[in-house]
Image (cartoon, rainbow, N blue to C red; front, side):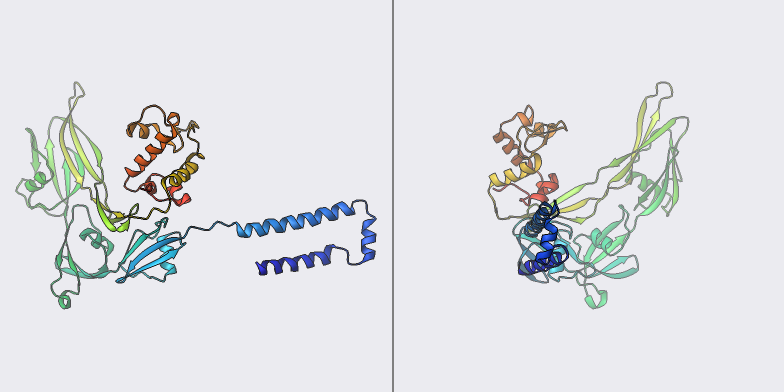
Length: 409
């Protein structure tokens, strides 16, 4: 404050030397001008107003909330107060550096928005990647075999098999924890009733591959080469049917998601421990040329889905505010606190429910017509039903208000 006042006095002296009269004669000369007094007065008032605005602004800059954060790293646990907005910026301020293969949960971009927020830094250990006779070495702190392989730069197909075995001798293997074994799938060009599709298999013969892909041979179907033909990379396998009209379509197989509870992560936070991906299914139909009716012949998974594994935090957080304060901040962000809000955008009430969500929760009518107590009850019910609470349902208000991801108990 003292520095700001000194700077203002210095600026005022310079302004005075340049613009204000320096002697009694100057004042007399200026006063004879008909607009001298009002112009002088307005100038002084503008200068004082500008200073007041500048001074007030310097004290009105918003400060982020201070939260207590628990950081676990290198076999120690630090509890620190922090105003840093994200996990990454806090680790940087604490001079906690990350090495090759290290893992941070939750991710570096996760916002810190509640007390007792937990951050875990897992240090990478040497691992051996075994693919046939080939051995490579890397560092990883990932928790699943597939995630370890991907983190160390291995390109994996969904059908590739990835397993781990304990490292028996560190001096021989160079691996402290595990050896990651990769068994590659073999690519095969499958021509299914004239439609080509690249599939990958672990089968030994054509017949085994067809069984693995759940391809049933119907009367009139022929297979080339023979069913007992050994599988080789990029070979072509034809499943044929003469004298019929065939059509095909591809469907996406939804990505499976497996959620595991983790008491070392704060409730409302999560971490992806294995990246997943959707699969692709090829469906073939025989078309009746007279009626146009379709009869399904085969449904073949040409690309397997990969399960995404997500760790969900279950460590309780202290309730720094009561429920009424939590509800007030949320509805002010959502609708300005107006329980009767209906702007015509398809969202209603103080918490801007969509009609489908409102009805799914078991309520009738429109949200904006419901009493405030019912709307409050509904938002608590809806938030608690979500795995991430407000962090996934309404991240905008969640981050801007700084309230907890879940309603205070």
